[in-house]
Length: 411
Image (cartoon, rainbow, N blue to C red; front, side, top):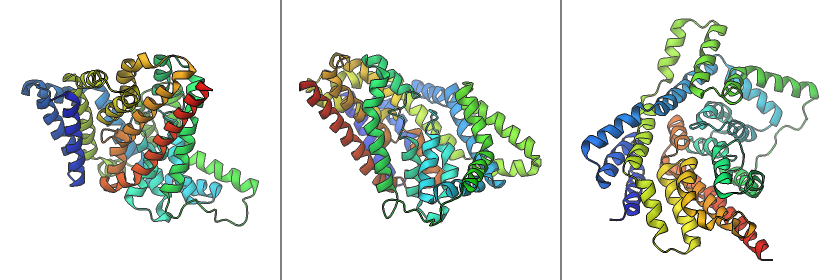
């Protein structure tokens, strides 16, 4: 059986198990075992992959980051800081739907794996008035968190793409701007029941009130902004930034040890630990079996028309990794013969780019998706029902940009 069919078989099995509401952590761990046997890995090698995937420093740092986010946000919520910051933001933007959308969009500037968990507690707090379902909260937090990932040069995937294909970063950002605009529009019109947000306040805020709300928002979220400063400005890993700021917040607020221990126990989640292990072990099995390289080579050697290859190869890699950097790093070098640094071939680049990202957004391997779903206790099947239409809009926008690029290159 060709390797790409093995991958498709495993992906279908994962989606079927999701349909039957099997815990995603069990789903991914069992799928990793099946994948190992499909790629002829001996049991001892599979066991080694399990150990490496679970104990890899990146896995441990990511797990620590996500658990610390839960504990950190739990402390801020207990102290009323989240409620006050959300109230201030609603005072600025008038409508809770705008607040719900803008919070993950702001957090999305931070290019961190699993970063949607930073905004999830705030979205949960801001959406209380809207009475949204767990699935809709999951979608809104996840979707608006990722509206910049394919356009901002702060994201490694953007820089990696520009470097590999020889396109200036500024040009790539400009050509992908319609994707961000379409994503924002799709999130607004499809994410909220009843369509576009309606602004409720009839009397505008005074300048003093607005400045007061801005000050309250910044003041109550100061610990979070310190995390961002340490992570982005000083390049300190998110896990260490969170640990330092969480400890500093506890000491500054003089929280009693008994309260801190209660919040740690309340917000600790073994399900998140096993989810992270499932994702990272699955990726370790993929690497050990040479799955990504073999799938890429098989698809490129099948004699497919270039347009089909531009869509199928990145989409497959995006689905099996759920990680934009992986699909760019593995798939784009194989597609380089079609990627010439000139205008006439930019439509190929855009097709590969948009199909890969569409798959990443839908992938059950995407850390942000599974973590947000777990945080809100949402039904994954219903989340996909909300997610597929905006992903389709995102993809079709990319196709339109590719067609426009091709038309202009010919004129």
